[in-house]
Length: 109
Ligand SMILES: [Zn+2]
Image 1 (cartoon, rainbow, N blue to C red):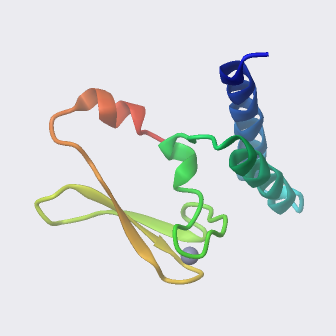
Image 2 (image 1 turned 45 degrees about the horizontal axis):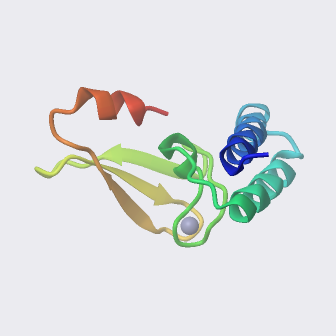
C-alpha cells in the first residue's frame, strides 16, 4: 500500500477519535485522545488547525475550548488568536493572515 493512502487512513482515524472525544466528552475521552496521539506520532501526521488547538503547546494536554482553554482575538494591529491553557496558563498566538478569506475559512474550527 502507498504511504499516502496509509497516512490518509490514519488521519481519518484520528479525526474520528478526536471528534468522539470532543462531542461525547465522556470517561473514554482521554483514552481516545491517547490513541489519537499515538497514531499522530507514529505516522508523523500533520493535523489540521482545528484539531491542533485542542492540544496545549506547553504542557501537551488535551484542552477543550471554552472549558479548559480560552480563545480570544487580540486587540493589537496584528490580528491573532490568543489561546490560553487553563492548566499551565501558557498563552500562544495564531496569526491570522490579512485579506485572505480562503485561508480564514480553511482555518475555521
Ligand atoms: Zn498547558
